[in-house]
Image 1: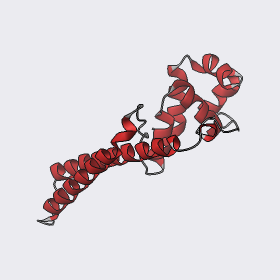
Image 2: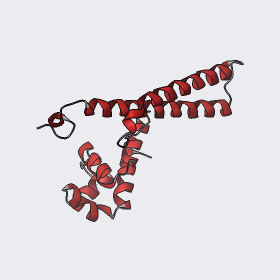
Image 3: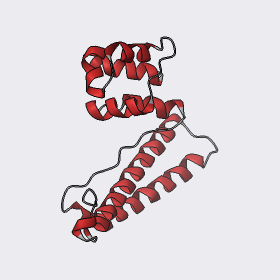
Length: 157
């Protein structure tokens, strides 16, 4: 699915151009033209971000990433107190990495990688990335906590 198809589907899943346009400060007819690619109207990045955030719907972002050969990975947001577990996250990350390496060596042993081996490696990789994001999120929280209150994220003037 293309980025424009995804934008069209997102808007129409939320009431169509008439419902969405006022919320992103556009005229419904303009938004509709942009979504169907009529004339010179273009659905831009700023509008894509607005509707993505407004409806908390990542379909445009995922389509954009897929068209560029990439994958979107949401950042892990830790709850209060979870930042203390960064060393545990690091240990989990190290364990996941060792499992990934062991499974990769096993898969390559016969110079063939089966579908099951590839699926296992993809799961291992996803787990490693997840633990890595959790680790970075915890370290970021500790970094923020170490700053003086007036300069913490969202409070700087």
